[in-house]
Image 1 (cartoon, rainbow, N blue to C red):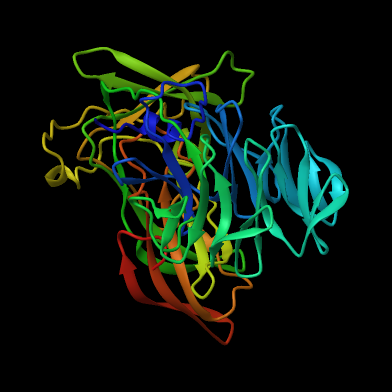
Image 2 (tube, helix red, strand yellow):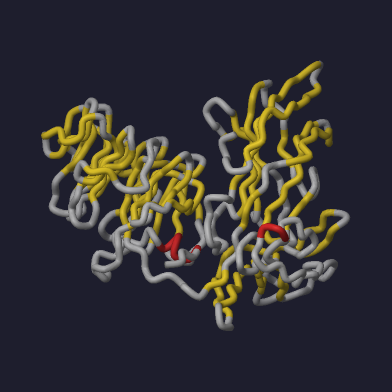
Length: 450
């Protein structure tokens, strides 16, 4: 069965009343990404993030990214930020709890000061972790315990000491991150991968954690989707602007899929500052499917270009090599998709030449709609320092860093796959007499952690 991008995001949909023949799909945190592990063992990156949590009705996925809790409506929504926090957990009635700096909050309201790691039972009881251990209903239920997880029948799994326990009995020495699948099987993360009722799950790896379960709906089997393959940064250079030093870089994203990346922007009137961006997905045999709200389009005046830009198509990050801590982000003003660079023509089975040769409405600030796109075999490429393609080095100490480039960082654009959306370079930053310099150490075309 062909896997489509719509099905990948939808793979985390929890449908306890769904058809029994649909296999369960495991969703885990893996090296800073939310990854779906399909029944055949295939792994597909869904989004940059960690700590995935599924809503009871299967309509929402929550996760953590860069210290913030995000949610996305499944299968076709765009992620939105909720608040600063971690450990999202859905209540049976659909409310979202999370751990903030001052304790556990629900809908922004503080309900458990100085607590963390919320978890809900099926009957609506809230468990949290405090210095005393796991607290349920205001009472310490497990002294010293952490990572609570309720089964549908009320059993409580948790981490205590060096393993996972269930109602006082240790069931998984060395395990962590307990969870329950819809049928009541216990799932734990271990040093060798994820286990369910003690048996290894095909396709999981060492380092996988925070398991959650779902059932995929039927995919859009006729979609001709793009495949955005991010190239590693090139042309890394430093420039001084306004008394600040900025690290610039050339970015390039290939479309190596069978389908075009086709985006249409619309706004109801000229009073609206932005256009809503919809993705048009061509179908095998003819026809087009519209995926609404995959992004935003704005008019950008940034010499020498003055036209409509799709916002946040790429994201550029400077991270510390030792712990992958985010230190700086780009000021990129957006992208105008067009078939100007056929740099990936050798990577597609059928290169048909350019299709999108427009200028994204250059100078036309009064447009109510605009179309742009990238055909198979073409590359969206922008040079260093162009339209904010740089990160500010002010205050960044000398050391070894990773410069990460991500395509489609929110995962809103539908693609065939998402595991090739990030690439990076490792570099050494030095300062001498207040002037920075960089030396390239390594290029990683297939990894964000160079």
